[in-house]
Image 1 (cartoon, helix red, strand yellow):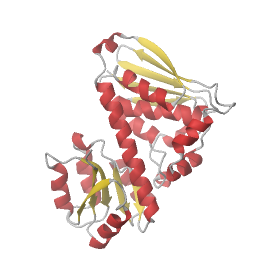
Image 2: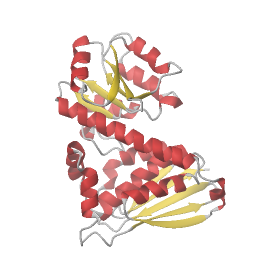
Image 3: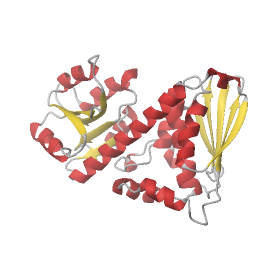
Image 4: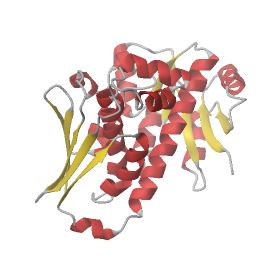
Length: 296
């Protein structure tokens, strides 16, 4: 199997050398550019197949923000995560980068472990989303005949099985699938299993997230909890209602990108779902019910 390719763009040769050294043990192929215009030409080449972009913010001729905006205007680059690395870390600058589509923000200088962890998380998320899109796009058109249906789910495997089925009933399955996955995973981990935001951040950094989810699913206080997702086809929209049996959470601050969380390995899923997958997204009550709609 060919290695996944990562594009690294930084006008400082020393920074390129450092990044290459930090990532040399990872099973990836790096393409390094000190010239952002040359990097853009490589990115838009018909045969390009990058899985991730590590991008310096401040560069001459074509700065990182403009290169990022160019990427996000191109449909073919929509699901390529971008890690923005920079010394510009004011809240307004971070917000600008996140809203333009940066997946993560790294403030220079950073430790090797920080870059490695974020690269791994970003690429794992992209692979998972890609698999969901592929499965959703291949389901039978017969699903369009369904007017309403409700599913129960408990585990991450349940989410993996259900998302392609549910997304396949939407006008654009590949757009709906990532948002559905984020909301359903949130219902399991933060809802039914009580994983806090801080706990998930630590688990993601240390690579123990999946093991902790599996462990909590066996605990007496959690093992009987289920979540549900209801699909309804209405006249002008499709509506999903996801309910969990947890105590809820402070959902309002996760509906938009927050610069204070820009350096965490998690916390973007709800905002990304609202912005990219759904026409509307609304949490109800204490936060254990979320209603997401797609205009048809």
